[in-house]
Image (cartoon, rainbow, N blue to C red; front, top):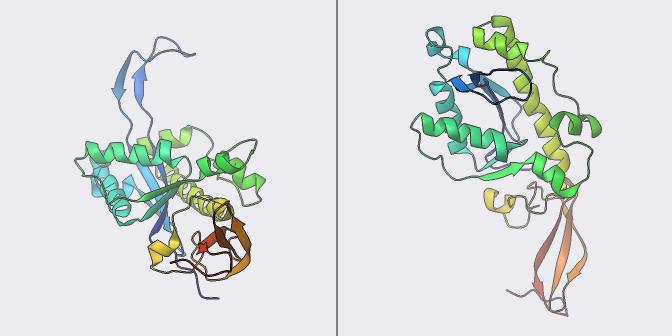
Length: 255
């Protein structure tokens, strides 16, 4: 079997600071006024098919010494990755990671990155299965893939915002583990994704598995409608099913 290609598929997870505001009471109350708005703390990423998982955080930039809330350079680095990617994978990414990232991009005057496809593993889990919980940690545990790292609570975020070195070290490890687990969950679910971006288009191939790019696919019967017939294929690497071109009743492929 030939090695699988992965195109430019980016796995990401972001961490943000909270909003800071005033309230009259603690329980189920509205915010009277905001004192400061959220900003990006860090992000972790990995290119599918590559070994290393990277983490980029605010203390890595010179601006952190004078302004611990300045995430401009951090967001520019994230924008560059978005701009390179053909597919972006994140857990709850459609509602959180990608939209939050876009919000910071436009704040910093960045134009939209090059168009890309999105895979939200939380939505994919909800689409095909009835798990008791679709949180990343619960999926990882239930599927035997691992767990998220324990943070110890909101104190970790407070420590990072105050510039505590130990807190930042732990935050980076936490952020990185989220992407490590994300990749495992994605690979476990990939064969079930009937709307997965077509890897043949990304890799300029014709007959590989459309979900994972493997050429280890086997013919397994036919798919019929009232007016057509197609060869069915199953990938031995990820388990996904695909179909060939239209055929006549005697097996001749229609061009």
